[in-house]
Image (tube, rainbow, N blue to C red; front, side, top):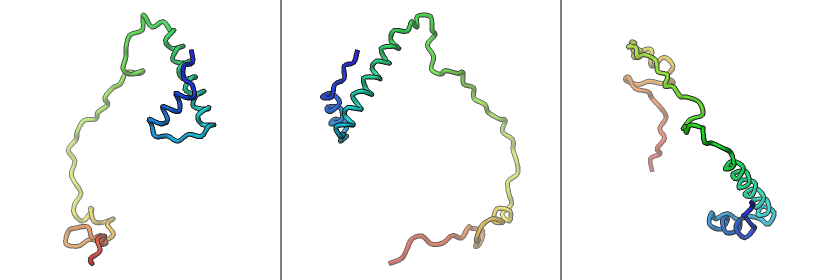
Length: 98
């Protein structure tokens, strides 16, 4: 049954460094008790014949074959570049000198 009271919520909030209003404390008390009630309902479910699992659905690693492809030429690389100088991307200076 419900075991969280307002004093427990205040203690938890203090440990978590949370500053709750009186309304928030009341709301948290209700919410935490609902969580504990739901956990109690889950504990009552018979799981005797249920196999343990890590995932709800089986996972597959979908990989494609590696294929060797040609790379772009330097000219193609710089076609969309805003500026280029001596085979390098030219960008605005971001460090100011004193």
